[in-house]
Length: 297
Image (cartoon, rainbow, N blue to C red):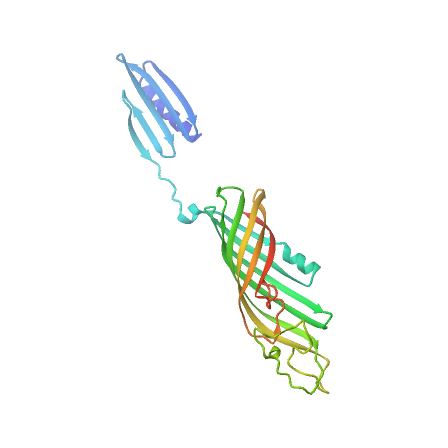
């Protein structure tokens, strides 16, 4: 509207200054407003025009098109704004369901950036807990702690601007947690136990496989059940394959398959059968699936 008012006012001034025969035209096209006056002076045709668009204001007059531009500075766009298309935050639905209907699970959320539709740097944080009992051995395992992952997904579809994505990615994960293992203490048989099961470390005994895993034996004064508290740190890597789709507006849903490979696990006496964010820390590798709901803005 302002463009149109500006161009009309300018050409009205031209027409008044040329009181002889003239014709006038005003129009808008896209982001450009333009107006023109055609006059006839001394048997010669003259032309005056004004255009206004994002690039500036142009004055043209005479028999030939002579122009004089008044540039309008364009708004500077930072490199971050240029390449950053969207941000997204979301949650996983699988972990809470696993804990509700089972004995272990993770509550996790993530934040993700969309860089040029190709790269998706991702940060995942969560809180995992477990309360597992092996009724065959009467051993109970409890653990709860936060965990974190960081990595990046890569869109492998040809159309990077589509509402659908198929991605592959990598993650690095870490957790440090305390866990309690409660079980019966075996009776003293009088034989010395030299089994490496009770020496701790990567080859320690599993808390769900037997009764002698504490490395101690019962005496007359000892209780029948004992709880051993330990601390463990686990690092792992993940290979990700997944998909994401727009549902409505900024609402997205997606899934991902995770192959997890344990990188390190600190020494222990009783195997940490659940590590938050990873799963069974006694397993060197495992698979997991996530189903996510996210909002993109």
